[in-house]
Length: 406
Image 1: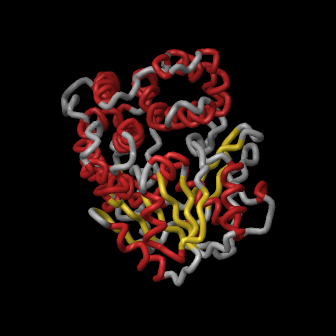
Image 2: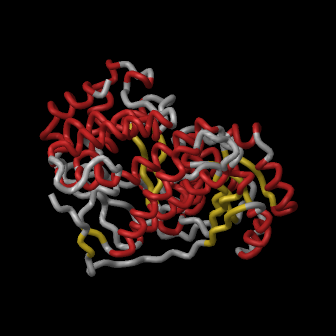
């Protein structure tokens, strides 16, 4: 099968202003960046580990001096809505006029929602994306001006410069999703010392998630030129960085994670249509349910554990896309049997994931098989993975695939 990528000339590029500070002592410019927004009450949001086990927040406090307005350091995994509300209450009481998120995905997403709650007056339930049965999703227009946000990353994350945020809600039994372009950060910091504070286990989990998206994104046959470049460059960066993530001193590899996720987000702005083959859609839906149901499972581990099985079972539905993925992995070439591509790719991915300590089955994640239906049911309603609502017609097959992942 010949599978070249067709370059589309029909696309739209949307650029958003953001400053990126990277490298040694990048944080030294933080006071000037805060001053650029005329802020006098900068409020920091982070998790307990960053605040209590690293010198990072203390360094930021020293840099800002009188402009350090306060701290909320209780943001939990997957941004529980209770933590987000508590952070917003504390930031409001401190008179915050700028927010600084210090951490990775959960903190970055949670801080965006803090900005929303500080600005909007309606109840939270009216601010989230709605999913009417049988109809397209509806994201309310959140028109109030938002406080500027600065993100100081400790680990590369796709959450670093997005407009959407998902927070965990135990009462709803699903994630609450917010969308507001005004919550995109005004600045990103990839400071060497900040990136070196993260433990290798966290870096490898994040690397697994970023690499997963990079390889899924290689399963495409048409793209706008800038999106095509961003996808290939992100995959090259991740392929180069992945073998080095276990080294706690390799800051260049950690910086590559930041750059790869930045490019992955940029390719959407640069006209890239979502890559929607069955493997990426089903793994995304299963993984979202899994890590929300079982708090000890990271997003990276969930994606890695599910992918080989889903690829072997469903890859044949998108043969051209699977050939492109297998070719990117170096295990398939033109003239090889098309039917072999998903199996070769799955075998290779198992080896790649194992190299960074990521699992290839759900059994190795200490997830009981009795969770099958609790994982499956929300997956069948995941609009982002299944906007055309095809999954519910495949309930029995998808349950069988999920069971096989153990």
